[in-house]
Length: 332
Image (cartoon, rainbow, N blue to C red; front, side, top):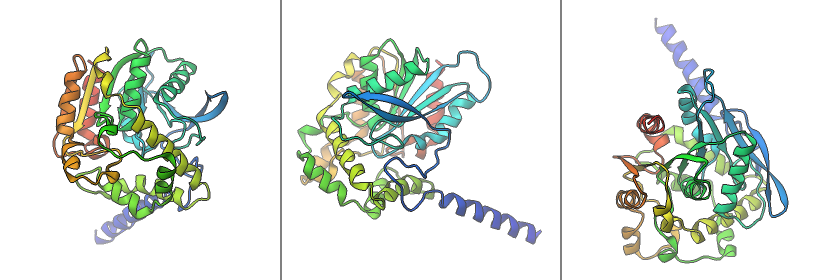
């Protein structure tokens, strides 16, 4: 019996070890050597007269379903489509087709130096869905993906059946209290990133750190070790500017589709928090319990779900609870 238990422990350790090694030490701009949880396809998005490869996953229901409802999952700024892996599996097991793009400038998509706008990202996504034969979609956006989901919904209300905002950023106008930084300053800041700095920042997303979260640190950190990193850093600066300069907070009252807000109550995310020196402003902003309630009041008929003792990423930190609330809303 002891030998069997020892063997089991060895197998579990080896399985963990293999999993822990799945992120290479160095990754290029398009994460070529990093495997996503489902097959990655590519769409040619046209931006400023040029075509750019946009990566996405398009995962059918686990069981054959006639005309399955489609869910679109939109990632955050410091994340990639792969971090939706558990949610994709859950939704496909419940009869949904799930489409998960990496926006241009993120993940396995190319990293061009273009003028990034939420309107353009929404248009790229709309064209991808059209090519995939999708006429209606339920949109789920996390963090920056929440800002994009909002813009997509406002631009394409007839295509958007439902909207889910999971701890979205952009619930306040960062220009009013975060000091402005020009593109050169932002680029230089990105070039100074370290693996330890990325880890410390990611740790602020959760109420308690778990080894499972390390993968999303390691993917970003591995890009620092590659010659492509200056390109990645430049695009990161450009997309920071997009978030800073293109608020959606003033348009929530224009949303006309059924909307669910899922808000981890311990979230204190502020885009550009490191640039704020005034401690009073740090206390006044990024208060998601208040921001969630305010946003729910602004969006006509919105439902608010408040998750206690949960931070910025409910679908990773409180997966079961998030999935239950998501499924309940999508099936209403």
